Each structure stands twice: as C-alpha cells, then as structure tokens.
Image (cartoon, rainbow, N blue to C red; front, side, top):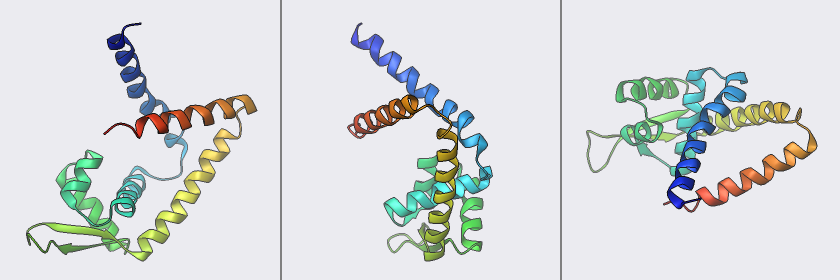
Length: 145
C-alpha cells in the first residue's frame, strides 16, 4: 500500500475515533457537558500551569465568549483564579486553585470508575487487545511534534 494511501487511512481512522469514544464512553458519563468542559480546562491548567484565557480556548477550540463563561464558573466555584498578566495588563492569566485540584482529582476518579465499569464488561481478550492498542497509539502519537 502506498504511503499516501496509508496516511489517508490512518487520518480517517483517527477522525473516527473521537466520535466513537464519545458515543461509547462520554455519553454514558454522569458529567454534564458544562462539567466536562470545566474538567478539561482544569486538566490543561494542571499540566501546563497558568495560561491566558485565549490560549486555553485555542487548545479546546472554544470561542472567547464561551471561555469567559466557563472561566467565570470555575472562579465562582473557587476552582480557578484570574490575575492580570505582568507583561500585558489587558491579558488575564488563569490558574487552578487547591480546591480546583481537589475537584479535578475526585472527578477524574469518578470518570475512571465509570470507564472501568464499562470496560469490565468486555471479554479478557478484548481488554488485552485494547490495552495493547492504546499503548501503541500513545507511543506513536507522542512522536508527533
């Protein structure tokens, strides 16, 4: 098979993966869409540290007005805080709070339990295949710059 054809096949497969994951896993979870977005924002802040609202929105493909609403909710809950950027006072920097870290940890645990419950219904061979495939996908995707 030609490289271009294989690249097209892989690209198509990756594009189909997210909707499949959403249908099979995300749609069955107890988090609302709003909670899931807040969870994703806190995850970015946990990994990357404080960031401007615009950068978080770019990473999540979320518009500025919706990002502001999401961030305002996180701040009202005490899960995040904002401060002006030292270099440009017009830019707001968002950081996660200790309460946000705690909520993230508990929520991640709930999500992990839910996914584990769904996966536990698979046959042993399917679990083994899925584990191997995920390891391979993670290893290969980490090479993408």
